[in-house]
Length: 492
Image (tube, rainbow, N blue to C red; front, side):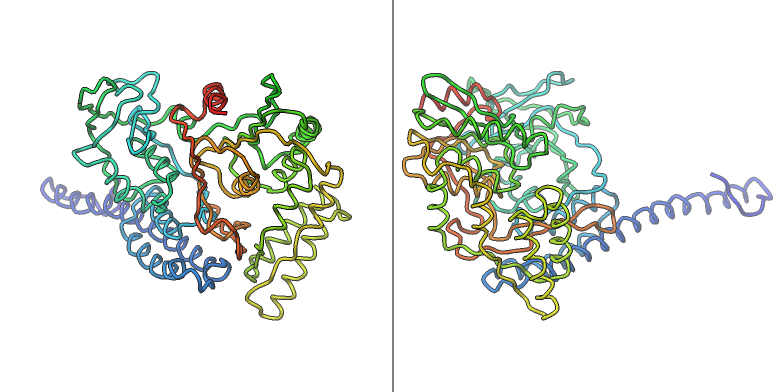
């Protein structure tokens, strides 16, 4: 450390002067660093709060008092927490705290730089109400509990209590959903860079009941992830494809509702093959790995399989309609989408014309200072898109497989499938959506992307944050396709 004042005149004086300047310089650097992250957190919070107030439909929704209450109460609480921020990780934790309070899966944040995750060498899952070891590292310096062991408590605190009180406020507060507990369970032994917890004290040991019933304590060693975690925390996405299982049985991986141009070519081939499954005895629609996207992809698949009349009849029975929150942000988002659709579909397509009309209506509503804009029916788009599909189709046994990540357009797909008489639902409970949907994104002062929904469904059959819970629950590794297929076929 260089002292920039005059020279020290004696040994004693030099010691005094150096100590006077040396300590405050460190403190000043730390204080400057802390203030930087606190200011950035406050600026991000303000930007998020303003966008929620001016663009999220929930901010004007009189039917959702919890949402409207959290807009201000949560902002105050998060602002208080921001005073504890000392790093990028702390900053993200505070932002996630505010976002999680909306209990809206379409409100989220993609940070510009989230750092590295660390973990204790194993990840939990659930079997019933038990928290069990699901995956372990291939090489860890200390002993790990074997797969299938039940973790009862860590640092003498019950697992469920830790997840509910310590982690849930920063990750997902929808504790009424089975899928939320499945995801929270994975976080007990993971310090996830995507979902940091402010001031979290990582557990040092866990009490475990081994598969043979013996109880044993394991000391935890936390280390930075070296590439193993991602496959344990996220459901892999099987390639979207049709598989012939023999004997008139077919398995369709319905895993990708955000196809690229290359994916679209493969999708068309798959749709052509599905069109010829009318005489099949069994078709399993497997949505594992599907995170949502464009609902029309799901409608295409179902129209090819079941026939357009069946799909349209389900749609006509719905009384649901959508209302857009009128805002400059919604208008800019629609304008951006319109530009993309020109390249994807062309200006003469019904899809382009639909969004173009909606964009112009939004512009007019802005000038007229309206709060809401009702979305026209999209039936004309569906009719054009599925003009070549057959009227009738497959009439055999139909089954649906879901995982706990199924949300948004994946749930729209499940809405239609589960409305078909006789369908069998298997796998894991789905995630859930609020009535708010169709997102736009904005860059925050920190550089991260904050996204939020722009419209609200009215009279939707599926309720707010309502999941689909299958009567047949798979308790193995849901990512193991061979095991899932064997288990499903044994039950059909």
